[in-house]
Image 1 (spheres, rainbow, N blue to C red):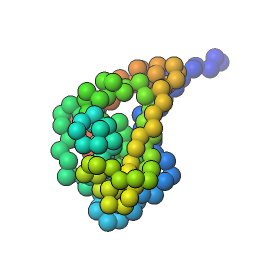
Image 2 (image 1 turned 180 degrees about the vertical axis):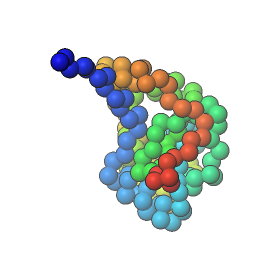
Image 3 (image 1 turned 120 degrees about the vertical axis):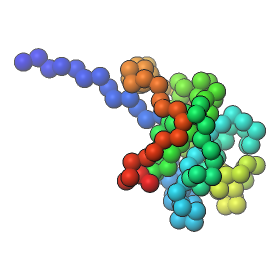
Image 4 (image 1 turned 45 degrees about the vertical axis):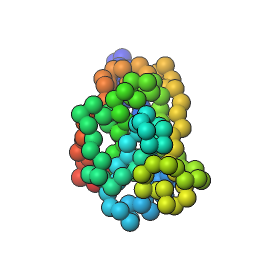
Length: 143
């Protein structure tokens, strides 16, 4: 019997550090369910913004990268076109951002660290097709 090679599962497009996950949990305890949106827009450059879920309108062109700690993470369509070859890691750093993100009063701000996907990861992502666009419903366990 010959073993059949299975293609690698696509890697996550976004992940979270322990420090960022802890801050998300604190913010969720105060504000309820949350969401992130990464844009290349006006507010704090291309910083990830954390909002109460439903307070930011996800557009049909926004790309759903996945969920971190049961929190959906979106990126604007034009920004995704530039960053589609990178894995994003949500982190937190001291200093106040200039946007409307929920962590601003805490004296810290969310940032993303990025790295290029490896060739193998890029092939797995290509096989899986493009990520979904527009608002996505998370599974019941993730809400």
